[in-house]
Length: 241
Ligand code: SF4
Image (cartoon, rainbow, N blue to C red; front, side, top):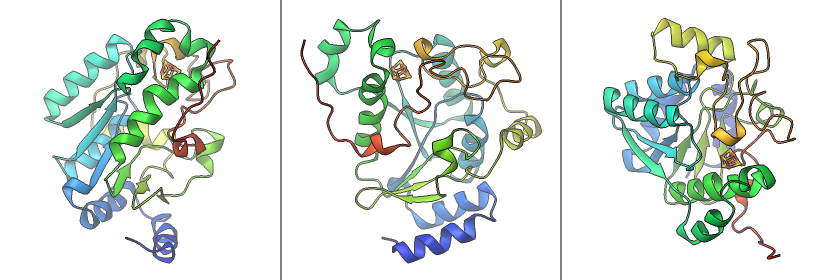
C-alpha cells in the first residue's frame, strides 16, 4: 500500500506527465488481477481505452450496463469489444432493487436521478472495485467544477487507489488523439450528442455548448456520483409512501 506521502509525491510528479506515462506506472505497480478501468464507451472514452489497452491488452474493463442506455451505445460497446478483443465486464444493479425499479422504471430517472444513478452506477461500481487495488477512470478537470478539484491519484476506502491519467488533458487534446489514431466514434456523436450517458438523461446540444451540457440538462445535476462524495455512501434510505 502506498503511503500518503508517496501519493502526494507522485501526484506532483504526474502533473507534468502524459497519460501513457501514468498508465505505464500503474501497470508496473499493480498486477493484472489488482487493476481495472471503467469505460462508458462514448467517443471521449476511446482515447484512454486505446492508450490503456495498447499497454495492457488484457486489462479488465468495467462497463455499467444501467438498462437505460441508447441501443447505439450497446451496439458500439459490442463492436469495440469484438474488434479490439477487449476483456469487458458488464456491471448490473443489485437484484434486490429489481422490484422497486420495475415499479418506477419510467419515472425514476426523471423524478429521482440521484437514486437512479446510485442504484445503477454507484453501487455496482462499489461492488466491482471491492478487492481491487487500482481503478482507472477517464475524468478530466475541464469537464465539471467537481472534476476540476480532482487529483491524478486519489486514495479510496481500504487499499483502493483511483487513478485519473487523463485529468490534465483538454477536450481538444482528446479529439486530437482520436483523429491522430483514427479511432471510431460513438454513432450518436454526429447527431449532436457531445457526451453520452443514459437515454432518459442525455440530449443533443449545439456544437459550441459545453461538452457535458446535454447530461441531465436543466435538472441541476452534473455528476452521477461515481466521482463525488456519493461514492462513499453504502446505503440509500428509501421512504415508502
Ligand atoms: S444517468 Fe439517468 S438513467 Fe442513467 S442511472 Fe443516472 S438517472 Fe438513471
